[in-house]
Length: 98
Image 1: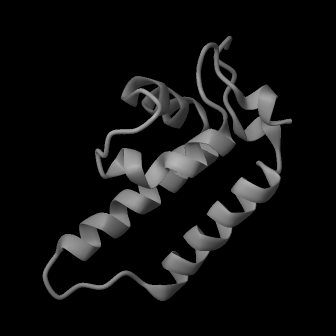
Image 2: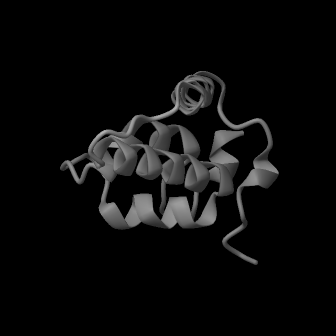
């Protein structure tokens, strides 16, 4: 199923889930910035996950603001599920041929 979510020459959801935080923190990694960015643009679920991480990171950077615990828990659960099981529905990915 994950293979269906691989973009032409790109990454699948499982690969992106494993490196998403490093990518968003601009840490050097095994995959190119372009391949991760392309996947996040094409895959609705991974794109939303990245958006949540960005919001959380911005919130943490703001003085005196904290990230809501329910947001943290939702991200933890989603990431663990994506790593262990893959996405629920391949239709969450937008076909690059559309």
